[in-house]
Length: 519
Image 1 (cartoon, rainbow, N blue to C red):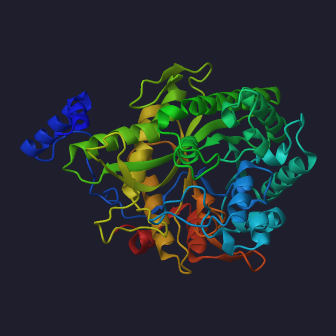
Image 2 (cartoon, rainbow, N blue to C red; image 1 turned 90 degrees about the horizontal axis):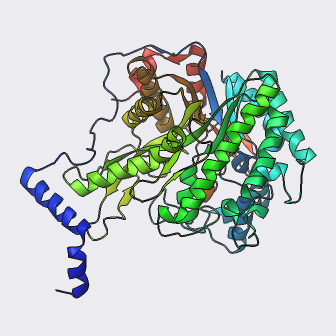
């Protein structure tokens, strides 16, 4: 036997693994870790109608970098560099981006790459369209690079302010409640220039000073026009994709989550600054704000229910991905699962008025006994031939939505706002999106009425097709299609009509549930 293998087998973790395997062989599907749930949808005897609370927010969402014209951001720099060097590939499987690439970006014209969706000029008709769909809420982000395109600026750029003030005025005119996001993955490009110590981005010594300037400007100019605020959109998605997988700027490949601890700590400090500043300005203006974050929650389950290591790994990933960041906000202490990192963050404890949930489906965890610390995460079960999946190969899993919503409420006892939920379906009849919409709204209703969860919004991702990060313009999440090369023409899909019927009825009819709900 090779000496290196002898050393490995003597390590404690391998003895634990071997013990688990013996237990599995002896007792079958052992109760180690989380188990795989066979339910596609949550069982209920209620067949409809399903009426939502009278003050419920029905909305749709976009974000600045994805829908607005290109600003001098880190993402714009990445997009321009990827185009210049022809990096247009995607991963080996659907939904898996290739580091440093933007899928099929070379197929888009210069106008599309620059203007994204034409929203800068078309927002009055887009907001009117949202109103006509029966929506009463609209979520977007305030682009940091649009307000502070240069590092030396002490005050926000007047044209940038004017753009967002015009957008908010249009929303007010149409009676839509704005949901504002401070950080939705993009920062000014200058933010990632190294400082004197060689640090860049969120690890710069002056990072929080720059962030404070931006947040203060946003609060002074947009409170009380915006009451609903999200400080950070999907912080761990940003960490994983930007610092480990290298598919988002800054395109780094750090070995594990421990190596990103300084960035996670900086994002928690950024949240504290955002929370405190928005509340301080609101008090001064005798206004109200509701401030939280949006977590990208997924249902993590073992690929093989009989494998204890799959189950243990799924349990650990569920905690790390879904809850570590929000747990830190609850307790004031950053603890990263399966690491020794434990650190108090000044001012953090309790800085959430609500919990924002973004949910897109299920992931399966497949362990490797030779590399137990690096399990494989799959977006669908390759052996499940009939599993409903979207265009990116992501498994649709409505019951997981119910579990996430009820678990978030159990943990934090805070109001829940669904800030994103949707699916990629480019088909003209988009039946998959219609089924996704009804099935997932059924889970929201069940969570409210049978799970006793305080849920106050459902915001669909997205109102119209837009730039989907490393997937470029290929993934179509919109209720409304965008004909990019034909003047950004908006073409409502059947799901837009369905969502209109839902919002205007404030719920799901029995016919919707029968025809489009889960089997």
